[in-house]
Length: 132
Image 1 (cartoon, one colour):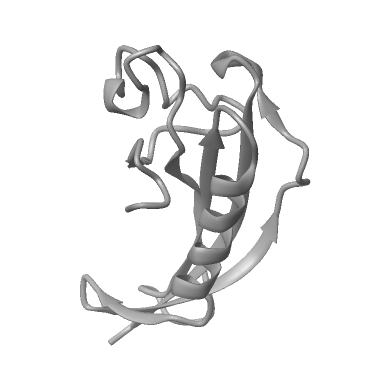
Image 2 (image 1 turned 45 degrees about the vertical axis):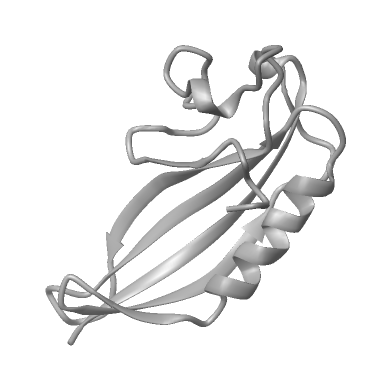
């Protein structure tokens, strides 16, 4: 968690471009004593589809977003770490094998106006679920 001292927040109700999961009221630990945003992140559910002939198999798409108030070093490091941890990883979740595959990323010059133009970065992931 050293890369994201402001925290990592899973929020399945968040949809892009509504990136307001990080707020001073809802996630106060994401801000320092002066009100500046600490490097932090969120996990966003982009939707699920059925996959293949198996009734219980499917694909879920998620985005991993990172914010940083000043500079881009923390968001870029967090993106690289997420890729290292997730790409090709196969986990057993709720009785299903889930394989993570990188599916894209955002351009590198995004900012979030709702957070005083904090640097914003995201990567998209495809999670394929198969019955164990």
